[in-house]
Image (tube, rainbow, N blue to C red; front, side, top):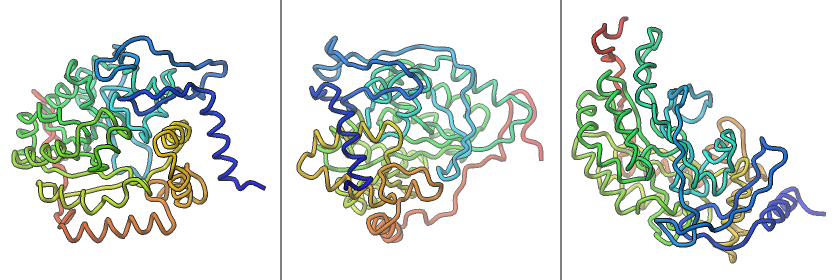
Length: 369
């Protein structure tokens, strides 16, 4: 009799085999998974054009829209943020493990190739933020940029919405945190430097691996780890408090790189860290399984089982307080490494927080106590 994990493996494998097998270089997801909100749906991707980035890919589509809101209250208790704002939905970076893929289904698209190819552009994002910050009942709290998708993904080169959001935050003295995998953040060094002087900005760069062969297929349109270190160094020298996000750590693929990443980041000016342990919820389970077995056929079974061992025998995990860290021997080993090397490289040693006391509405009153 098959175990639940073996049944899950065969179910995912059968589902993925329904899709075409041609490998799309320059994309993370290789298939379009079914949208759980659409009952009657046929999904099939055809190569229609040559992408500007790589051959053999459908062109990325930028879909402009007028959004109704931009700042969202984060209800999840274990993600370390109270509010977030995302000028783009979908992400061209194509990270195969990205939890934001599932959110793309709310827009009527697939969490797979659609997530990387159909990017929603919230053109009125800066105006929405300005209106939000003028709301009399806004009790200034830090807001996270890229709480869902990367605010410095390739679309930013054309639309500069993140720049607009930062300029509004700087004007209102609204504190903001940033998480990115793209070196395009350096284009905003001037405004970040101004905000840093007022202690209303900090930034994290996500580094998952120094193995370029792994990065190219796991997060294909992100910048290299070497370039990310240059970002940390340049912005830290400019006075911006810089940190690293090591997420996710995936047993059998990149968890052994934690020490190297932390040391390199510390050497380049990072002073704080965070990490997550891989979990494969929703459509990501199907996408990651397809990607894993196509790219690492010789040890895919080992990686898949190690992930399951760290989540109570399943690759997906929704339990508060456990889902982001995992459990069991492998997850404990990663947690111990994180603690050990954090102390060794003096990470997270300082008591530091974004300053909410100087928030003000331009032309009006400052924050009232």
